[in-house]
Length: 108
Ligand SMILES: [Zn+2]
Image (cartoon, rainbow, N blue to C red; front, side, top):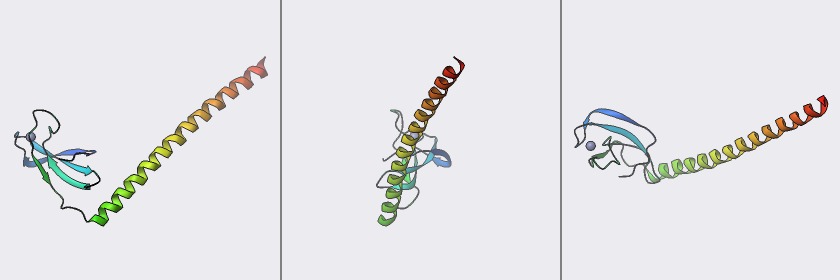
């Protein structure tokens, strides 16, 4: 089972082999981007069962290509934003160090 879900919610009415309500998650893998599925809420633990069921039908290859492209672009944009954020913090520190230097020289 592919499991790159970012969030999940309990789905009432659907019981897994463990006897618990299943969770509804969204796959963000390259092969199934944005496709929802149900699974055991204990997935990944040794005591989990293997219950798994797709909620959505397989997506059209063009849809997958577009979504995967958007996700890659978002990832690149997130990394660039993080770099800009760090540069801004460094400039802020430099600014305050400069202000401290100026104030000390003005006062002394
Ligand atoms: Zn289970």
